[in-house]
Amino acid sequence: MAKLVKLVQSPTGPALAVVDDIVMHLHVPYSDHHVTILINPTVSEFQERPLENANVKIRNLTVLEGNADSKVLEFDFSANSVHTIRQGDKNYDIRLMRIGKEPFEGQNFHSYEFFVSESSVYQFTLEGNIVGWLKHKDKDWATNNKNYTFSPRSTHGITLSVSKTSGRSLKFNLVGPLKNEFGFVTPVPDIIDERGIFFAMTWNTKEICLYVNAQLIAKTDAPQVPPDQ
Image (cartoon, rainbow, N blue to C red; front, top):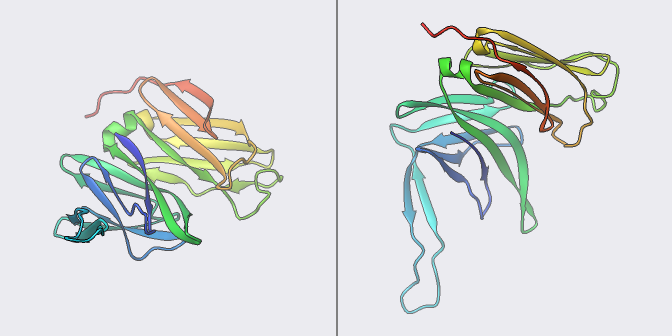
């Protein structure tokens, strides 16, 4: 199971999303740099219905309250981009993907995109993915002759390190999946999105693949993995 959801704090919303049995609601505080999500609140919904003897309708209204099973999760793009929660008999990763704005009637309202997927510590070593964007405060980082090392991305004991060389190559080093280590080197592509360069490293028991800007760049056959003890 995997789903991309967007929460928007505007009159038209949506500020609430449901993924499997998880209810996600945009909560305070939030800003251009971080966001708070209320997980599994109590939801009371008032259905739209006409008023008696009047050609007027009441707008749908949803009331949410925290309860003993609710969780408040804070996200940002530094140390808190991913949270893992337990729902029923499954683990889920909730990953902050993008912070943006949605225009409505002359105003800009905050919007937040999340990638929600099932996770399992050992199963994740056999099949999974790490995705993200590469961006730097130096506007010419992708075209200059400097070296850059980006913050590593780690989850479930798996770490992906990315660097850019002075020769305009991107180096991806993945440690952990299939109880092994994998490396790919590819030329720095053109930046075609204001968010930077998108990448996705995927793996399963057949192959390990690197995607850059939604294009398959490289892949290698997966090694044989001993059974989990």
